[in-house]
Image 1 (cartoon, rainbow, N blue to C red):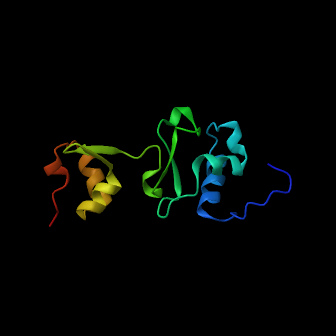
Image 2 (image 1 turned 135 degrees about the vertical axis):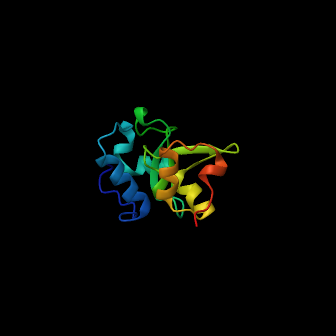
Length: 123
C-alpha cells in the first residue's frame, strides 16, 4: 500500500468487495493486494452491482477474469441456464418471470430443461 495515501473510499461498495475478495483464499493478482491498483483496473462498483464475479474460478482474481455482478449472481456456483438463446442465472430468470427462485431451482434439479416447463407459473 502506498505510504500515507488516502483514497477516501473505505466502507464503500467498491472497498467492501475488494476486502471480501482478499478474504476468500482464492489467488489474487499481486497488484490487487493494493486497493488503489485494484481501483485503477476495475473502477468503482456500478450501482446495484456490488460483488465481484469470476469468469473462470480456477484462474482467481486477475484483470480480464473478473467483472462486477449483482450480489446474487456473483457466486461461482450460480447455476446458469439458457432458454431461447438467452443465458441467465436462476435468480435472474425467477425475477424476470415472477417465479420463486427455489421453485425454479427445484424444477431444474428434477430434470426439467424445456423453457416452457421451467418458466410455467404455479397456481
